[in-house]
Length: 466
Ligand code: SF4
Image 1 (cartoon, rainbow, N blue to C red):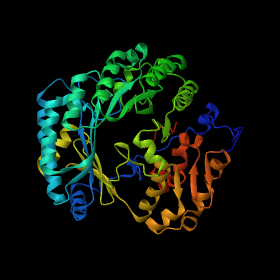
Image 2: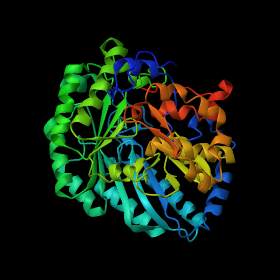
Image 3: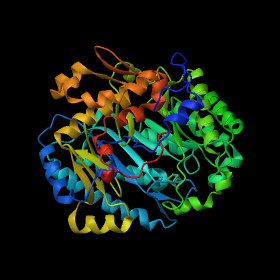
Image 4: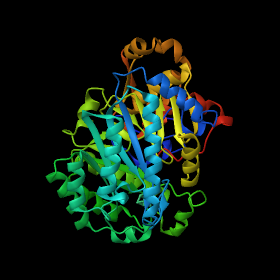
């Protein structure tokens, strides 16, 4: 990595800079990253972690519930989904979810407070408002949803309209995320997902009327048929609609791993240069429109709580995304759900059959995970601070974890030089600070602190950082 021709006083994310830093790398939704987890952690280890965590009765827990069903499969999809029209399947699934809930709450004992609740999928609204009402009642019978609980749900505008959005608010949901991806009809055809601009506007207006906070649009760049012109139009429409938050994901084309992606014609994909262009245009347009860059691929209006939390260095990130809630521990319920409890990552079985059989025989369905070492905990803190708050303060590292940065990270610190030369990172007496332009490359900076990347034999297959 060299500083090349980049002008460090220029705060534009150029295509040249994107090209230079584009390499395979983790997304750091967790550290250590998922490929490092193993089946050494199973149901027994999870039971022990939950029991250990049960003593921290004053600390709220974050809860994730996975609803894996979808009516059809979008061609680009990389999620763990079950495509079905069978209405019995969700009913059977929810019975398993209830059993898992019971077992988890039994092990957590008096630790009942929930500070953050997220429903993801799949399509959570597949089970309808009626199904979600039942799940919430069940959760409420085992846990206390705290008064300031952040309750969020992913909504597919194709299957949930104005009425559903209103009803979900009455159920208690107070954050909502809409899967938009792209407004262009040709792109929508190429990804097998049709939803009109009017429909998106309808659900957005309903969410505003119902007084949701943190209304989010998911967009994807790098999709088939996307051009700089067509994507500029999608960005213009998005900016005009003015959602509070935008998550802008890079499309990873992996047809051998995800057979549904073979429906995408490779020749319709933008080439690498164009993909960089789409990303750099999006950063420019969204920031010019007043959005703040939260993490490398998330944007929020200045008045949104995520922007304010980032300014104050209080932003957190977990598998549900960015949050202002400080729940350190997280329980995942349902097929493929991920949790973090008592310094242990756990993941449930990722197929419906395996999930069902594990819940029926053991009451829990964890099939892999990782118990963090002391070194993992230290590095996780540094990486999380950089990814969320774009800064790492030496004194805080010392006071929280009793670690002296200079002593502990002497060799990592040397690896930061190219980022400093390229104007992506600043280092002073207080600590490290990612510059505005460096935000786009924060994954690359975090990689300097990842101990597992030093050992290629333990490496996983990662998507590219840009
Ligand atoms: S709705 Fe979401 S989870 Fe379902 S197939 Fe489409 S992209 Fe995948």
